[in-house]
Amino acid sequence: MNADAMRDMLRRQPFEPFEIVMASGEKYPVTHPETLLVLRSQAVVGNPDTERVSFLSLPLVTELRPILPQPSASNGDSR
Image 1 (cartoon, helix red, strand yellow):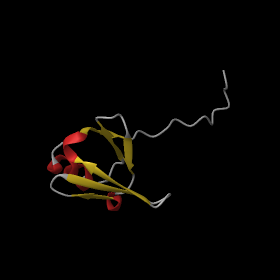
Image 2: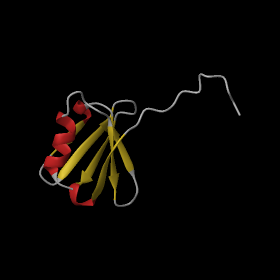
Image 3: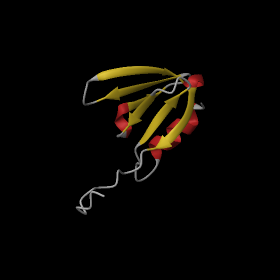
């Protein structure tokens, strides 16, 4: 993965949450631009809920995928 492509996702206005998909299949959500630091060959993702930090190797990133809003089940139809 190219660091510039990741930075472009962070700079979108308005910001749209996305997930980083690794070659292993692991996924790392980026829900706010301040939770991701992009370096030359690595990215650092912080999870504000768990206060965990993950270091990712950019060559092992296979995809940046938008996180789509989940449909609400508020219509009361449970069929």
